Length: 283
Image 1: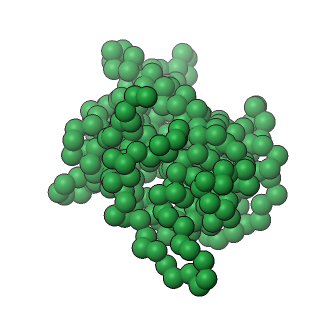
Image 2: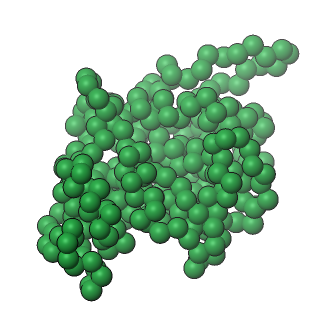
């Protein structure tokens, strides 16, 4: 097994959900595992699609399979399967979740895309911020830094504009009943210290672990104190952001379409879930 590729134990967790080979006239059907390993290599290295090593097959095949799986919702089904298993094994912290955002600088190759399909935003989640043109990833993790959900906005958007949408994106399937959509506590930095955030958390019976802004929001609807011990655990999402940007295809945005970049983030989540459930053996 080469670096960045899935182990046999990791592949067994998702193999039965992969689409059945279709009928292709003339050529040999490329093995799904070979293609997935090519996507993992692309995710980790950030190389151009055309630079995929020949051992993963033609780059056109890998890219076409990536686009088709994104359209068919395969990545979402795989993530739901793994979240269910993580939850069943007690590997997701249901007491404390953390929320934060990080800016991703866009390369010049990300510009110039046309509007494609109803799912693609008009602005392609690109905007001009202090760091240049880029995209902002709004992220929710559990108290141990395991990524749970995300949304994308243009780089100049404030965290407050995507807060509710990002928190509602978390849906943890359980063995019975409705999916889990809220924790007991939510930790965030001062960027979330606003009355609408506290009001939303109160309505959902979530305890806020958010420090007050100096001179900005002390008063009605904004708590004066918070749990400092729980807040110290917020560094888990900082570590998750650092790991996420260690995936070079995410650290710099090359994809022209926001839906393709979102699929790449889901692929990173998938990679992390597999490593938690089936850690690779040390070499």
